[in-house]
Length: 256
Ligand code: XBP
Ligand code: MG
Image (cartoon, rainbow, N blue to C red; front, side, top):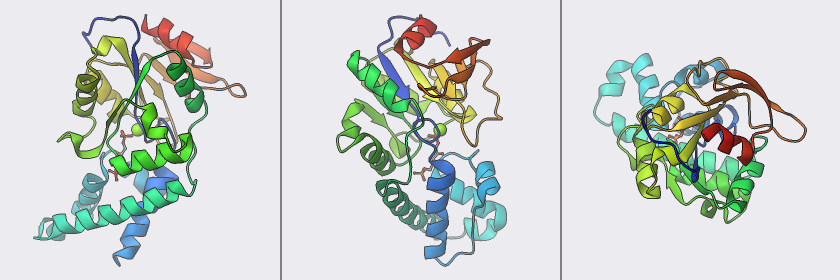
């Protein structure tokens, strides 16, 4: 990471696993509903889905799984169309589940977003998930104007290659018009950390359900969450043990 450091101007957030624990009880359920709709006998249990999360992007994940269980069918004409149809259905299920209030923000996320807005920091999103999913989650958790909290939303197929490719982060930095040294990224997975580091961004990692055993050596902070009044976060900051609540003062100090 070679970007020059400077005053902290923007925070760039991953969505799935970082803003909210969406994977196990959100995306996974929606994929299984789409498979059932299509009359497929595919079913992703919790451990299977954890393994498949190594493949980012829902279409890419389904194709990978299909190639594992039936490579010939996955290569046949029409395979792409089936994947696209399954993904449309999956997105509809996910959006409905989230709109019904099925997913909450992780502890401390709303607090940090509000602090950042109050201090004039710019907010952005860099995610592999589909834009409709981002909108549904932000509206359900932050309110009808939730999308407007974020000046730039980089999502889904905005770039040709998904994380761990850094493309979505460079796409967001270009639109913010900021150098990486003026921003911090927030991630929950090694794929996300690789993407952010590839774009030169220092990264605060908050591990979650599926990522608490991954190795985040090299992250600016490697924590179990952001923490809030009732539950301090703990982990490592610059490799040193740290415990507390992550707020703007901490981020400015770490980024300085
Ligand atoms: C999230 C993902 C996404 C979701 C599914 O990764 O990998 O693919 O699981 O979303 P990250 P879609 O948190 O690193 O952005 O089905 O809309 O692709
Ligand atoms: Mg994530």
